[in-house]
Length: 188
Image (tube, rainbow, N blue to C red):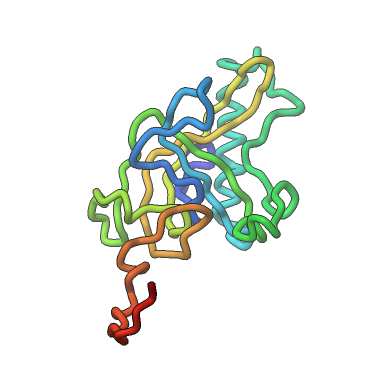
C-alpha cells in the first residue's frame, strides 16, 4: 500500500521538453544553472496527476511549519500547468492535451534506459523523447510567493520521439538516404 503522505512521485510515461539533464543550464544571467526538464504529462494519465496532487498536499502540510508560518496559504503557487490553457498550442502543439511542469535539481539526475542500464550518451535523452521521472515535491516561500514545486531525482527513458523545437537532429537521421550517384552534370 502506498503512503498518501509522500512527496515523492514516479510518473507514468511523459514527454520531455527543454531537456537539460546532462549539463546545467540557466535561462538568464541572473539565474543559477541547474539540471532541468519540462515534463509533458498526458491529461489522460489520471494516476500520475493524482500522485502529483497528493504529493503537493503532502508538501503543503510539511511547509506549514517550515515555510508558511503555521498554516497552509489559501492561495499558493502551483507549478503544474494546463498546456491547453497556458500555451499557444498552434506554436507548441506538443502541449495540447497535456499538463506540464518544470522540474530541476542542482545534482545531476540518474538516467537509465528501459532495461535500467545507465545512459551516458547525452544524445540519447533529448526534447521529444518519452520517459518516466522520479520527482519530489517541496514547499517554497520566496519573495512572498508561497507554493509547491518539484525537484528532479532520476529519469528512465522509455522510447524515442520526434525531436522538439530547435534540438539538433541526429547525424544518422540527416544522412539516412543513400548518396545519389553523380550524374556527371556540371552545376557551376
